[in-house]
Image (cartoon, rainbow, N blue to C red; front, side, top):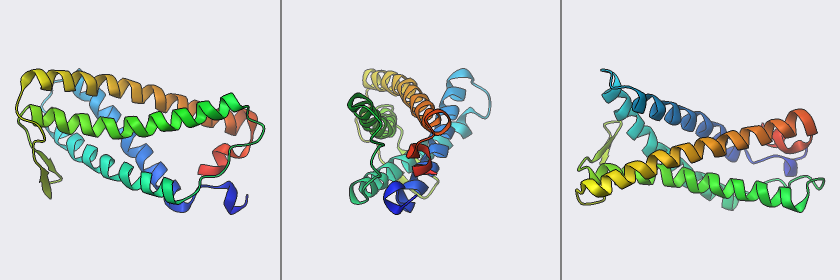
Length: 174
């Protein structure tokens, strides 16, 4: 495959790094709402730090996306499939931004600044308000389910292209 047929190295590194990070965050989030064990606070603290890291990485990823042209989709795809692929990518970016932002706002509404790996603290971004906290907690939870659905759709489409269609789509990110 030529250079025009693959994503740039920074895009591929960010894609796979964020895939691992988001998978970890989603699993941690699911584990936290299912249990109140002694490890819950440790996991919550790590979840917050990793969430801030995810926000920073998605911002870097957006810059890379805007400065590095992605490979074209195969000409064999219909216009509807191309629009669906583009729409899904846009929704993934929206979700990757919305999740850490709602998490940070939620913590602020609870009066909890977020310490990031003990290196720095993100101050509370909202005044303390339990109603706002409850609303943001619901949005964060529903956003997680939406992100899970989008990730599953993304993985399914990638596998479809790699295993069934055998076109260049999956290889372009590998």
